[in-house]
Figure 1 (cartoon, rainbow, N blue to C red):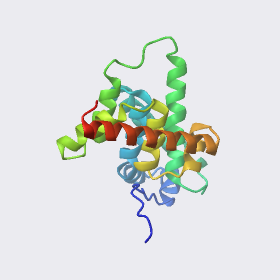
Figure 2: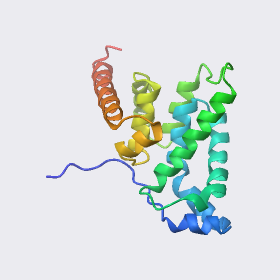
Figure 3: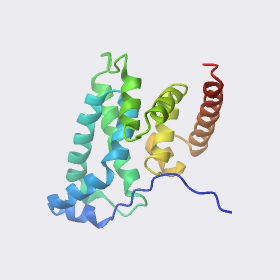
Figure 4: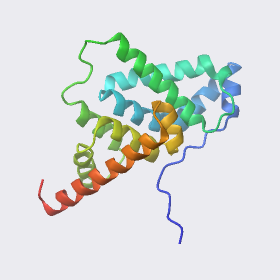
Length: 189
């Protein structure tokens, strides 16, 4: 029996970029509604701050509007859009170097924003606590893979890291999550 893939795959018709490049605002709106959730979750995982993630999300779609003519059928459009988001985050981070950009409650805010669609409060709290046991980078890789359906090769391209490094960090994070889950279920916090 084939193992079921639990990642969310976001299908983005590539012709949307051609329409956006020609000034079709309804195409940009369509693209936004197809893709904003995984991009927002990704930005939250980077910024650990809702306000910064909101700003970067808006900047991402503005940049997509400006750069839509540059999109070339290069695989997964979501990977291209995530790369834009990541670059905007890095530019913002460089501008703010020396300033404190992560609030003390940033990780909890990120968890709340990422898991807000989970209806079962007990499951949501469990996942939020569980994700505190991995690094920001590991969280970023897992969210891009699970929420956005990006392949590890695409994630490696976005993060500018070798594929082997991304795979290693992913597997290490999964082991950490598994151990933390077992401890939490036993009540060993």
